[in-house]
Length: 345
Ligand SMILES: *Cc1c(COP(=O)(O)O)cnc(C)c1O
Image (cartoon, rainbow, N blue to C red; front, side, top):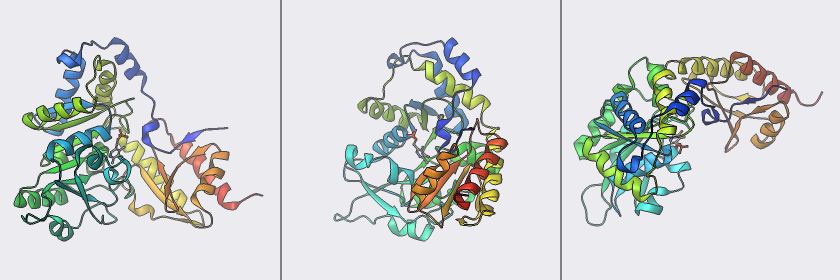
């Protein structure tokens, strides 16, 4: 039986070029700043985001947490979407480790935070209120079906932040998917944010790691928090080598994932009993609702056909296309979903 794993783009295996680069990587102790491969990766990552500096971190979660801890102090407030990854899946890190108050604004279905609601969430100076110290955006937006935030919208949020003296952190775990969708350089999407985190371990297919990018002074401070969180690594060039290959060779091919996601979404929409709007799919994430059965039963039946998707709770199911998923895999997944929806013969 064919196995098709569409749970996430984190299941991607490193490419042969990555394994080769890992084998050959020149390494040293990054605790002393002496790993040439890590240093090179941080340089290239900063450059790709149009920032002065970058720090290599173990995960996207660590990158976001280090950013929030660097921007905010104890008792400060950070504003983010109620569907954001940081709010849902990062185990309350800002509160747990920073004593930082998270305030959510309802995400619109397109992943944006409506500007009027965002403006209303920024606190006036008053000794009964926590201080608003940070706004977080997410691009592409995971729980909003991989929606892309436009340059224009991002610029409006940055202008609003500047007006109130509040910096913006961009959770750009899949920022390159957004850049490929818009056909622009990722640095143009990251440009105005004071900090940006992006993942090597998703669509770029590297095994481990993320980069947090910002000004030189910001990254110097971020390195302290990374150390405090136990994120200081040693011969990390072994993994940084694969991340570099990801950055250098795996960005343009994300367009294939987007095409496959569109084919998948169109196919799913044609199957009775599934609710989704295929015209809204922009990148590599397809979220749909099986109407006739609970999502966990749907997923169990799908797994019997060799196809894995993710439970998105609230009755939703998520499919993600990625390196290693070919058109034939999408076709196989669609046949499997058809069989599941038809029920036993
Ligand atoms: C995956 C993801 C993260 C976290 O990355 P990890 O490496 O899994 O910790 C953060 N934000 C978004 C939007 C993500 O999709």
